[in-house]
Image (cartoon, rainbow, N blue to C red; front, side, top):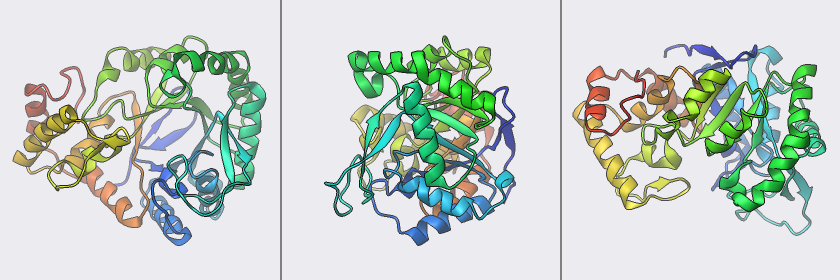
Length: 342
């Protein structure tokens, strides 16, 4: 097993391994995960060198943060890097019973999320996360799901104003005090990140699903602006919600952007998968390694809920991929000709 290299986030002092642990699954994303399985997965990841862990209050309505903290508190504080998110406050909800899926999570924690990107909202969210985690410091703090993709053009006006008028000041205050080491946005779109770079100085952006083996639209303006700004990118959603992990050859419904994949996406993945097969390369291996070739991408964080998935990700990182695969994908116009390749 190859040791994971580390990369610095922008101008901050925070360094992350090139493969991190996305802890949404520890919040029972789409299916229940037992406490024992959640602990085993995270401990295996840390032991393999995936010492960067990303969580959020939204993941399981507090469950992911509680589980992550229970494991990390047993480790020396300087042996891991932790990120969580702000922008949603968890409010008590007495109507919650059982573990029926809510907001995509099968969690029975009796809370509901309320958006708040104001100065006070972000400070309250940060302090509540410290309590759930049982830790005194968070290394990276992301503003979660701000932007028109989540809130719509009209709905985002107020949220953006709250952020610019106060939330940004809260982030900058926490960073200057040393309560966090780096700040950024954690979103599924590039437009709001570009807008944010016009109003503040950010160390990194957690971008889910928008720079992958399937999609390289971020090459147009986002990644060049990150380079100019001095911000690193943490690539989440590198399998585009599953289709680049499962492919389309196994007879199951492939998922893209959290929903069954449309025909044009299936067709494109079919072509990518066929070229991978000719070179005897697993599609998931190429999907994990591709984003890391870009100099602005510091890390990828696949979502993983079991020790088996941890081992699979490490194998994907270590897989030998011939240069001819990338040149064939580029010749077939299946990856952007401007994209750096491994």
